[in-house]
Amino acid sequence: MTKMLQCISPIDGSVFAERPVIEPAAAREILAAARGAQRAWAARPLADRVAVVRAGVARLGEMQAEMVPELAHMMGRPVRYGGEFGGTNERASYMADIAETALAPIVVENSDKFERRIMREPHGLVFVIAPWNYPYMTAINTVAPALIAGNAVALKHATQTLLVGERMVRAFEEAGLPKGLFINLFLDHGTTEALIGTREFDFINFTGSVGGGRAIERAAAGTFTGLGLELGGKDPGYVMEDADLDAAVDTLIDGAMFNSGQCCCGIERIYVHESLYDAFIEKAVAIVSGYKLGNPMEEATTLGPMAHKRFAALVREQTKEAVALGATPLIDPKQFPEDDGGAYLMPQILTGVFHEMRVMREESFGPIVGIMKVKDDAEAIRLMNDSDFGLTASLWTKDTERAAIIGAQLETGTVFMNRADYLDPGLCWTGCKDTGRGGALSVIGFQNLTRPKSYHLKKA
Image (tube, rainbow, N blue to C red; front, side):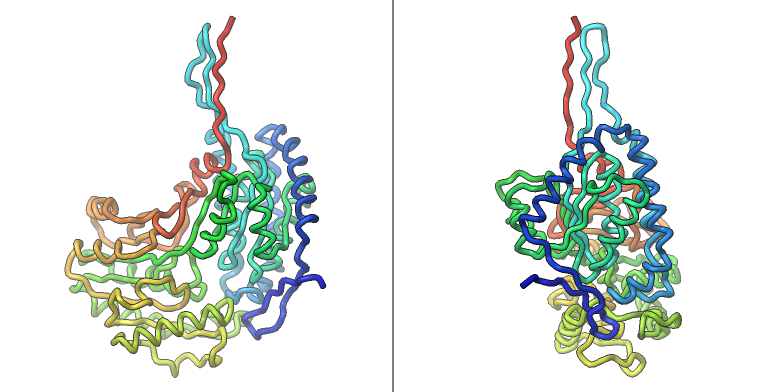
């Protein structure tokens, strides 16, 4: 009997889409064909590859009317916020813009005696395992530069966003990408690990949980396959005494709650200088109390369901445990009727929290944030670093030099000043500790999706 992958819509618990899992032998045939297509693709001029990728992204943009409600059905984001084409286009366009420079040879010597240079060559077949929370933007981070660099790409998308990979491949092929070069695979975990273990891929990029990252590393052990891993996060915000309070509250609370808190670099804990703490709390509660939790297909809805009821269950557990340990919930449940035990989860702000609580240490990935009062920079730095994760940190101050000094002491991949929850394609998207390894986008993204090859040519 064929195994099926099912996308259960968080809107009503119905099966929104299902697809059959591909058998290992069939997957290997498709991957072998992709390798064959890659050689011809890599031989094409860089300008041609860039043009085709740009066209593929543009074709994806033409599908927005279908994509927005489709995403709402699959993972619950309200239709009022539109799709992901703005960010998808920004990231892909930037990588296309810098490709010629980023992939240019490094010329060490070009004399009458020697020509010495370092070239960038594509890995071959890149495997992208993408998450459901921002399914187009997270996938394009690797798909676009990998194709531009001359690789073939195999995409395995999360079951929760089952249709995204199909749509991306269709858009790129309709725009002129050679058929079979960019492929979408419906795989279960066992087949995925088996394919990795037999070195079917030359580079793997995975975005997901820490547990998933460990499984990828175990499967790849001994194959020497390159890995890029973006895993969990517990991103902090720190509001200093000289911060623009209104801007800090608006941005940090939006960073904590947007997309029902299901953002890779969403704000999950906030530290506020004691002089601004009470005012920050008052403003934060007012913002969250104005949200409307409901059906994401309705324009009035500002907060949709979480992508799956099991994700909501985790946040409920963390909240219950924190309250039992003395935390104070500030948002009245009467304002946000929930479906008991389902995917619709009310937003919550907790005070009276401390780091022994799971809600301040473990990834929540939901519409909840704990806020603590701090007396100075030293205390804030200690608390921000007291985490197994390190993706981003958001600092709020008018003093750029102070932010840089604090940033240098933080164990994180990106330091923001007076902004949060944003991915700049010109900068390397990376993390440390349990957040993972490697880096996407920027010039470094191209370096990770290619390998260096040296030429030492002695002239006669």
